[in-house]
Image (cartoon, helix red, strand yellow):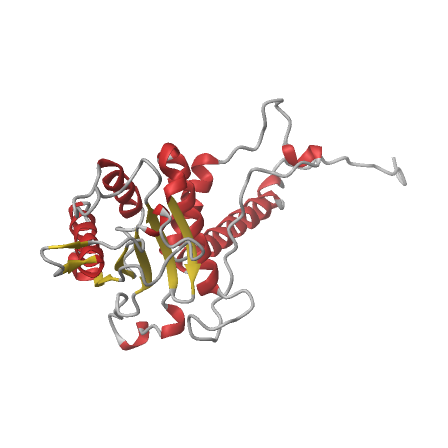
Length: 278
């Protein structure tokens, strides 16, 4: 019919899905995951061996829920999780005071790790081991206790207790490639003399330090990484108000940073003194 209006309805094909935006979401997730991966790799490369040990133990022993099955952090209690701070490397030489120093954090991390292992594996002897830090590194002092000595009187033979303590300490530091060790022997002020007065506390403290050094090497610590063996007799007492206190009879292990341990493969990979940390 002339003038009649005809309306045609066309059904759209279901082919628009391929041109939608869902793939963009998946691609964005992929790029985000790659960014997180490379950030993780960068953080790992900036972490010292000692901090890696602490972080490893953190993830092995972490306890988020307490006995009641409720997160401690939700109850306002102090969490048992210890956070290891990874600070940027400072523009200062190791040993100098600097706020948030990476070098100082590394020493603290190694000290904390050793103290934890002493408490965990040397429960009955933990009172005989003192771990602290000094300007150049970490110091471990293994002391006599009344009725539980590291050496028999006048002897340089290590007791089973002393050997067990040394084994635990060395097992936790022998894999750290950038450290060196000094061993010191100390006696109390009780006068000791043998072989007609030719063998005194000086010789005794030196020989005991040497005996400890041999045991350290038997536990896998490289002889080339031992800096020195020294005997101090009774000149440096731990308990100064009572120089005959049995705790003054001790072996001290001084753990130092080895600035020559990390050798660059090429000029582009050179590391300055500031970059070599515990």
